[in-house]
Image (tube, rainbow, N blue to C red):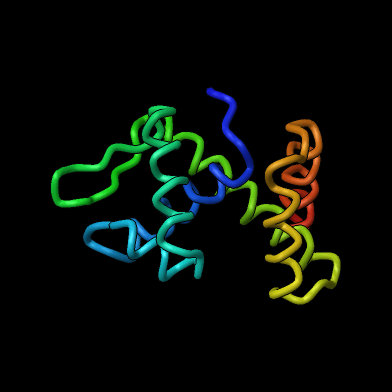
Length: 125
């Protein structure tokens, strides 16, 4: 996978989530979802397009490339797993999700494996 910045991963994750809610994802949808300015979103989407993570058609519909899809799904799953882990140790959902959002980009794969194992063992009991 290419080396994209944390902010790029966040935008990919946002597109991934929006895609399940909307028929088409457009830049304005990302603006509305994130609350960031149109110029910021436009710049970020341009970089993701240059990196081969997204494609934008003539109507402005954004789609994830296979590499973008894989990266977005990975970030989203890390977010969901970390949120579940934090909630399992007594952190409220809002804080758990906010903390997961910060950590999901820097946590090692080894730590993620151990957290998944912990959650699986906890649910088996």
